Image (cartoon, rainbow, N blue to C red; front, side, top):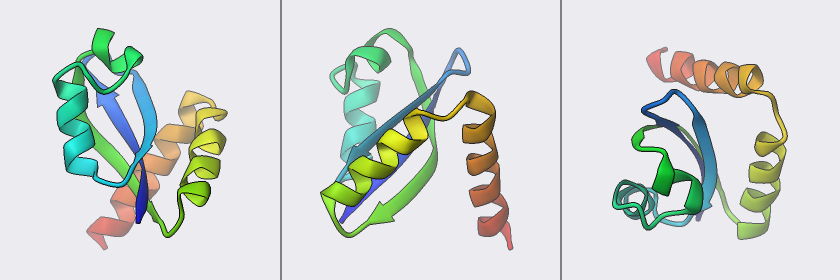
Length: 86
């Protein structure tokens, strides 16, 4: 299984990535070994995850989300949060 995830950084910025182990990847980001962007932007928390059966599917979704404006990403995060609360 693969996951697309969005991390909110301390400065409010959003980082989107994929992994097959969300907890490990988050630890890598907090340790500043998870990517160039998060090495210079302190990560705060994972605010969105989506699961895929294939790496290809996750990569396509990651590219789609990365192409979105910030407001659309925030709406996606909010939608998932609402569905989890129901």
